[in-house]
Image 1 (tube, rainbow, N blue to C red):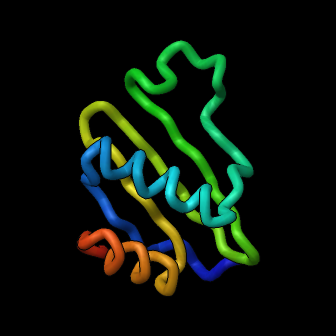
Image 2: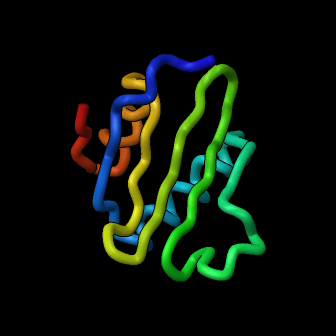
Image 3: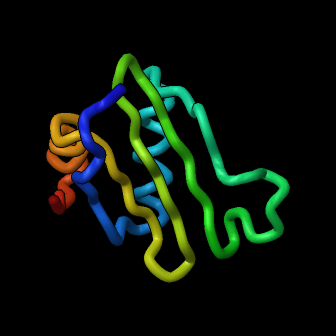
Length: 90
């Protein structure tokens, strides 16, 4: 299991969040959970995914008001923040 997932990047513009999500998937991160594809509001009002690689997990959450947020371990979130020029919150 991963470290405590208390490091977050919030208010990520939808297009950039989508780019981060697809980039990580192309680098071997696997979707292990997601908001139900059958939910009437998936991708309209809300969406979420859990990605896993090795012993790490990332939690992606999207709303139409706040766009994407990503949470995970300090190490992985610091890498994402640096790579995509984003601000990390603890």
